[in-house]
Structure formats: structure tokens, C-alpha cells
Length: 287
View 1: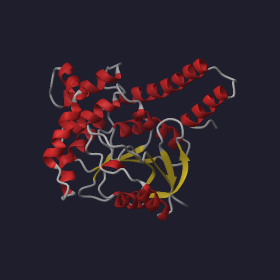
View 2: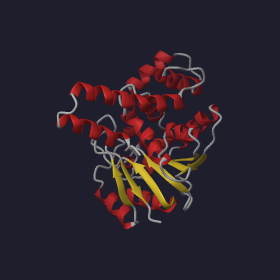
View 3: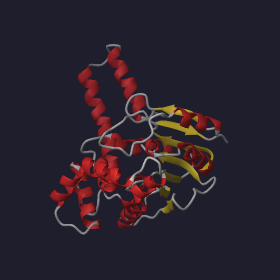
View 4: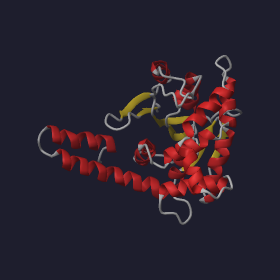
């Protein structure tokens, strides 16, 4: 069985280092492999009768918010950083962790930010969901949770490929939007609002947590929930890394060693790491 995409790319560029392949040929092959991921992502997310991913996601926003001007929506997406920062500064108080929950329940900017991110217009890292799907399909079980599901793109991708899907988030507006997006495609998901509910125990074969932990004021409690929610032998696939970004003040966690120690304490061991593209890791719960 071929390795996951980062492993294949690492081997590919290793052939350049040994003189068995030219850099141009390696770059061309890398783009072809990434194009396969882009095609899978795009096919899953395209809205009715759409062919262009960016236009499709903008149209979804327009439909949901009952707007007509896609240029206006795109302009807002492109300039969302200051709006997001302003909302954060207005709502969040450093001495009140619950104000973070209020931010996610009140912010519209966060929704626009995530949809723009998933358009791949400026960043390819959402394709890690396709990598996670590739990983999940190589293992037994079809029960999937996206922890910190945001606008639901990961859930749509996995549901389109036959997984039984659940989405969990602390943002009620994001959960409503994600559930609406699924329904538009005739898909369903179990919806878990983490402000009011805990994850079910021993319920999931694979959990993704994509660029979520840097947003959490209690990451160790999140690890405990994930460990409890995984079935024995199940996997957590995520990225646990962040750098300070003045445009994204909602990134509040930058030291992840305590998170890794809690994962180890709960018996979850690292079984794979992306050493070439985006740095995602996979942790497995023992049988």
C-alpha cells in the first residue's frame, strides 16, 4: 500500500537529493498529486450546479444570508482579518474564559473566514481533510467525528464518502450553518454543541481536530473528551501547532507539550506524522 501523500512527497524529493530526478520533474509530480487532493475536496464541496470551488462557497454564503452580491461577499472574506480582530476585542476578556464561548456564538466574521479558507484561494492546508479521509479509509470503522467542525466542510467530505458523521463545536451559529450545508446536499450528521453536551463515550473510529487546539483555553479537558470518545483502536488526526498572528487573536495557545503529555497519559500514542507538508499527527487509542 502506498504511503500517505506527505510520505510519497518525501520519497519523491529524496530522489532529487540522490540525483535520480530533476527538481522540475519533482515539482510537476508534486502538483499532480496535490491536484488529486484538490479534485476530491472540490467534488465533495461543490454546491448545486457549481463547477468552481470559490464561486460555489461564496454562493453558499449568499444563499444562507439571503444576499445577492457575490463580489461584496468575496470582498468581505478577503478583508475579514480586521473585522475578526474587532469582534474579539469587543467580546473577549482575559479574565473570563466564558467570553471566548460568547465570541464564537456571536461572531459572523469567523464563519466567513472559514469558508474563505476552505476555498483554497490563499491556503492549501484544508486539503489535510482529504489526507485524513485517505488515512481513515485504510482502517476499519466508518464512525467519524469532526471536533471543532467549524463550517462543516470536513463532515461533508466524509459523509460523501460513506462515513457516519458527527460534528462538534462550541459555536452554535457554526453548527447551524454546517447542518444547513449538509442538508443542502441531502446529508445528515449528529450535531454536538460542546457548550451544553459532552461527546459520547467509545463512539468514534476516527476524530479529526484540524487547527482547533490553538483556540482552546482548556486543551487538557479536550484531550480527555477525545480519549473517552474514541473506540479502542481508534485514531485522532489533527494539527497541534500555532504561531502568533495579529490578524487572528483567537489563537490563544502556543505551547502544546502539555497537550502531548496528556495524550500520552491517556494512552494515545503517535503512529504517524506529516513530515513534509503541514505537520499533522495521528494518535491511536490502544485496543
